[in-house]
Amino acid sequence: MINNTHVKRSALTLLCSITALPNMVLAAEYSVYGKAEVQIAKTDTGVMRYADEGTQIEAPFSRIGIKGQHTLNEYVSAVFKYEVQVKGFEHDDTNEPFAARNTYLGLKGAFGEIVVGRNDTRFKYSEGKLDNFNETQADIAQVIAGQDRLGDTITYTSNYWHNAQFSFTYAPKDENKDNQAGFAATLIYGDRNLNNTPYYISLSHVDSLNNIKASRIAGVYKFEQLQLGALYQHSESIDGTKSGNGYVLSASYTLDKWVPKLQFAKDDSALRQESKATQWSTGLDYVFDKQTTAYLLYTDLDLEENADSSLALGLRYKF
Image (cartoon, rainbow, N blue to C red; front, side, top):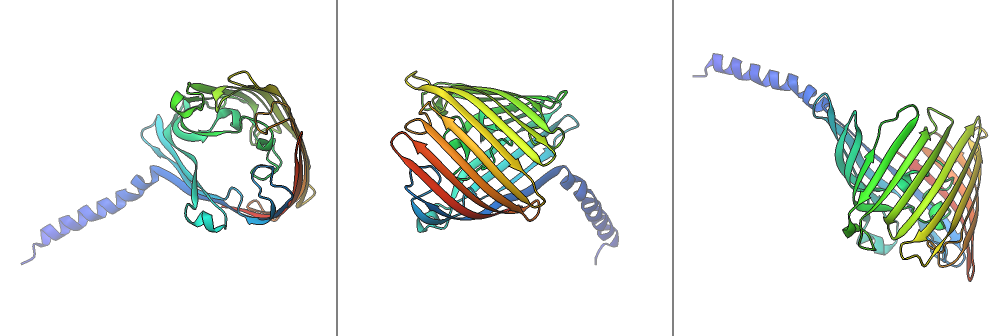
């Protein structure tokens, strides 16, 4: 015979467990995000990075990831991000379709945020919204050194204090090509994403990360529809055999859904390319909404011994 008292107690226990479940779930907040992009590009010689010679259909820097945080107590939360790049459409990409991007785990609280894993160096982070052609063949990383994402790093980012924020990257020697520990430090004033303030300025220094030592100042100012950006950087190799200066100037103007863009980058350190490099880029975006953008870009790269140019038509969707 079934014990009704036992059944009632079991049902009550199950009900209490189900009632408590939402509170447990709410302690963890996460989201799945990504970027799907397709680009048709015609590139002359294939000298520049991120573009092969001839006409190609690519998925430049497409990616998918999951990020979130879990409340541990009233003072500290665990934060995490696992992100991979989804490669293009070539047959070779089917064998290894993913590549590592920012992937880390850490803690967040009144002290700021500290994470361990693969992450953009805080030197790279300092560019903010300067680059009008980020993650394309016209990216400033084409000619400017220090735009690195490294594994086995510890990253600290402070909370904002009177519009100022400090961040720091440390990498042990086993991650560096020169087999010594390195760091990057950045101080930002203003909103890096240009949401809370129409400006930001960053001062940044990197030492012994990816075999370079460099200092830069960068800034962006947005006035109504016009956005202007500038960067100056002095770079040198750790062994002292190469050194030089780099410059970036960028401008864009929003006309309803149309955004014409222009960018100039130059570097004479020969750290990113084999010689002094100059790049002009121009483009036109059509912004359907916050998630979807169609674009046309042209970029021209001049080196001492070689030259290259690329014309691309693309569609980008962020989710």
